[in-house]
Length: 354
Image (cartoon, rainbow, N blue to C red; front, side, top):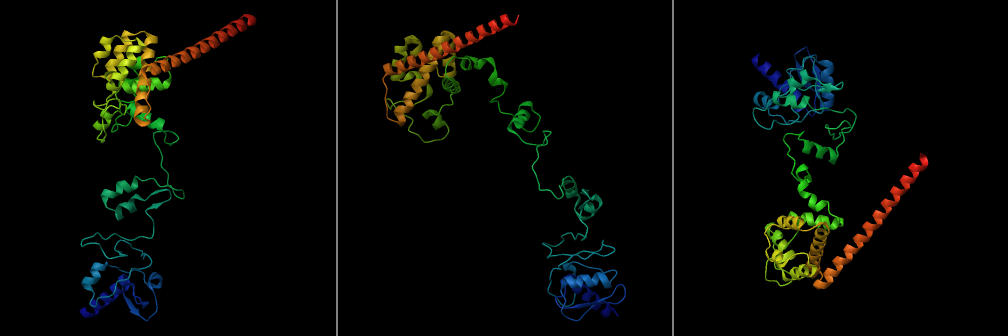
């Protein structure tokens, strides 16, 4: 009797797990399943199992290897098997990856239905550590996945929105860099940005104050292998103050400009920002604008000598500075005349209106 039960158990296991590549199913009673006949695949086997057997106990592949007498070739079932009582139903579509792998029930229903997660079903299938993560996922049924920026009402990302979050500290784990914040918009930088020079000159002066221009010394600080020598003499290291003051060429230019006394030119500080601030305090507005323009032409002449092998004399450079100043004066005068004309027109309109 025990042999019969053992043989029946083994046959039943062989049917449910291996899929029985060639077999026909006949159910006798509620708890008995036998294999007879030939020429039926796993899908047909599943269909007949649902039709003829009210309840079937299925076990995992590991239990098959342990209890079945003859070792059978394991073939994954092509369809899920659903029984009235699904709790003991455990079906593997592949061999367990390692011993002790949890055997989860198989259901025909999905864990996500009717626009939300079935939490009871999800908790019975997945481990507790993963349930909260799964339930927290919002799915759009029938729609493609989209990235949404939940910090805005329209849920659309923009650089402006991210910048505002960083500056205002809305996101606690992100810290904004000081560049572009209020510290760089304070009065300390107005001596550069509020000058009456072309924007390219103002930008270069601001970068010079921060010592962020790509001179040889700065490139070497960033780990780049460069020659590092001054393009005029080739004996000293090229840094910003050397290009503007220490080299013989800029000294001749400053001497021809008659802006700075020789003592100021010879006593050069090591900080570019301190140098420009000193010029701002010691010169009036027009002279400071001329000093910024001279600095712009000095750096341009150095680059042209380095990359184009074109040299310019100090007198020619000063003449170009005067030419730019003349053009700026003419443009400023034209703008002033236009503003005066508009003011006069507004006054006449008001008089006629009254």
